[in-house]
Length: 82
Image 1: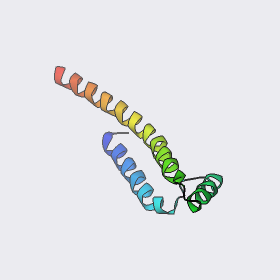
Image 2 (image 1 turned 135 degrees about the horizontal axis):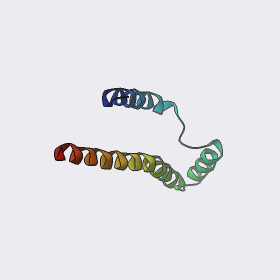
Image 3 (image 1 turned 30 degrees about the vertical axis):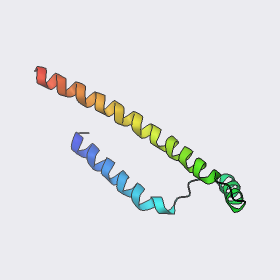
């Protein structure tokens, strides 16, 4: 699989995620009920829960992105040395 095919697959996945994301719930049903009851009582637990979910979501992307950058940089150095 060459870089062009990987890019196309990644682009398709990204587009599908953007299209489907408005229809996805961020929390499990139990967490959602707990947050709703907290918000009705005047609390702000929903913000913290959503921030935690975003951190957990971002971590794998940052790790894979970092590995891809290191791979790209090493490949570029090898190409310059040749």
